[in-house]
Image (cartoon, rainbow, N blue to C red):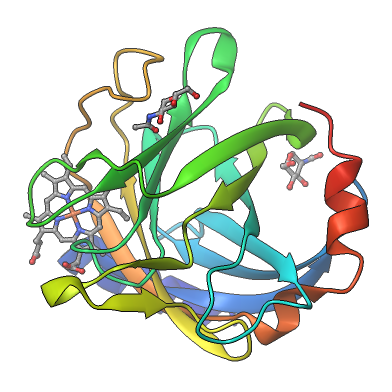
Length: 217
Ligand code: HEM
Ligand SMILES: *[C@@H]1O[C@H](CO)[C@@H](O)[C@H](O)[C@H]1NC(C)=O
Ligand SMILES: *[C@@H]1O[C@H](CO)[C@@H](O)[C@H](O)[C@H]1NC(C)=O
């Protein structure tokens, strides 16, 4: 396990690409939800960003459904990003960093090419105090996304994530923090990016609506 993580880290540092190497199910005491989680390594010393997704058990295939996204971020991350369909281009992107007073900033972006993503209004995020916290090594945030599981792909065809199986997601990491707390800030290019298959079947929650109703803004 350690050797594998180390090897991935070495590959990451050589090529600027990385692979998430640990998938798990996480029972979150703060939100009361079950998350499917993946650990995305960005440094050869084992540092990585943990991405957690929870969805309603009622989510049907080929429909848009809401997701709770919870991300655990080491303090040295400048900005991190999640690509909901596993590529930089033509899918909803979530970019996150810490703004003034270390408050989480989350930004909805879109890229048609390999250049700075612009604002994307097709997906919106609501940040909650529930499941958002920090300590001396990490910070984490919890948000609900509307619009992250369905989007207009190449040629305008509507595409959907599957609520049942694995979806290929991607992440990006930069050590450079955007200079402002505005969610439309310019961001520096990433140092590392990587891909994994995220198990959405393990993210289903039959108590989703009841749990989300208790979230504090
Ligand atoms: C200033 C902002 C950004 C710039 C200038 C930028 C630039 C680039 C460039 C030039 C590549 C090609 C690298 C290569 O082929 O080796 C690339 C690839 C990639 N970028 Fe970005 N990027 C930015 C933001 C983002 C964000 C916010 C994400 C979100 C997760 C992201 C995810 C990826 C991924 C997954 C790849 C792999 C190739 C692909 O899937 O298209 N990038 N980026
Ligand atoms: C920034 O936040 C505002 C207020 O919540 C929101 O209306 C807007 O869509 C967000 N923009 C981005 C790029 O996330
Ligand atoms: C620090 O916070 C992160 C994110 O909430 C958590 O995963 C980690 O276990 C915490 N570390 C300690 C030592 O409490």
